Length: 114
Length: 116
Image 1 (tube, each protein chain N blue to C red):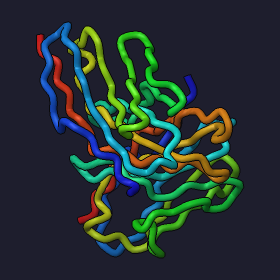
Image 2 (image 1 turned 180 degrees about the horizontal axis):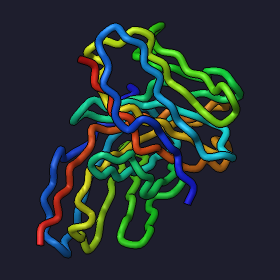
Image 3 (image 1 turned 30 degrees about the vertical axis):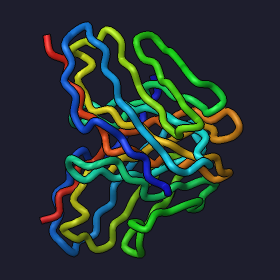
């Protein structure tokens, strides 16, 4: 019940195209859903995050769509660029007083081709 | 922009040896975490630390692991007797607040631990 399922495992998109990565969760206690971007040899970096009281959040070329009833959320990268080539992880957490453990998805390797 | 600093970037150790991975979190952050990532796999939670004590730990974080914040700035992960399966990238992270306006973590660049 703590799992976050992520798809696809890998994705190739042409420059200028839209990259879409999907995640699904089961635990309805999760109340914070971040996306992380990771380049080789680096730690995950927070890209964008959403809470379940909104259905969409947009920051620049990155948009999270959230479907609470379906327990699904997705990352859309508009106008994908070669510099977006990285591994993307969705994650989920729930609030506690002592910290917020993140449960990560399995990751999506995105490659944006010229 | 403030960073979480981890040292060393790469450590090779013999099976059965003790290792200490070091982290300097962002100075005004209150919550500290260790995660690990086995090559090609997802990032997995190990432990969270708040107010000088462990607040949550995973099944991975058994008696071989320990954490401490010895001097108010460093945050360390100790593996007492390393096994081959401990080979992974270990990430430290810190967070300023959790409730109600929770922000994201800041992760360090990681320490690659290789057990031979």
